[in-house]
Length: 328
Image (tube, rainbow, N blue to C red; front, side, top):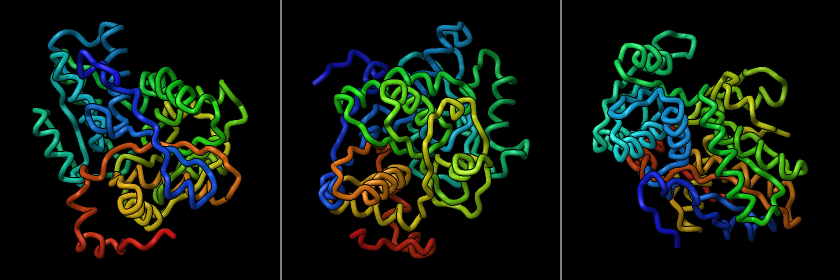
């Protein structure tokens, strides 16, 4: 096993795990990259590292400086995890409707969090815009801006894509993944497509997001809503521009929840909602290619413990009409 001399160096090089129950049922090979094993507990540690690294390199982030970001939680936790070791402060704007465990984790990390009311992106009080203003008003601060800062997608091009290629020795048929900022899909798909244009890339999307419709018909439309956190957008970000996508699939909250409890019961992995959505998308692609032996990869973005107060609360599940059903 590798040895890391710092928290910073421990980001990435995560295991790639074959989901035995899903693979055996579909006759394909379904792999999930265990990004919940990053030091801050999610795939957003990679984006955080890329953003901090770029800001240090261009001189905008100086010793003792402040990093400001608007986040649903995981990017903020990633930034805080890496900033602590490097001596930076972190200030976040965050919607006030996210899982309580995220706020608790950020408090433990000593982060200043401005919890704000959710509103449409066009509203100047959206958490994203508030972060931009706060960064301008704070001396010595940089705005991480995970959506438009292309250091996000670049680190996935430089690390995530090559790791997948090496772990599977280039034998990849499908990459399937949802989008939050677009960084993971943008960077990873660009790298893998450059290595093998035959790899098919499928964008996944919950209801209420516009990514599915954008890749299907060129417009960011999409109705409804979702209980998933940190994924789903209705605009073309600078990171998503890099994505090389062949098709898109919509995943319902019910399907996501069925998968979440299936992998907990059958594979011993209690994962977060975006992870479960990704795995359901991979499962759907495998069912469409049943018994073909195809290799399908996706991301297990974070752990279910980060949402335990909701996912393990029968009252919350009933209120959302999301009581889990057997997957198969």
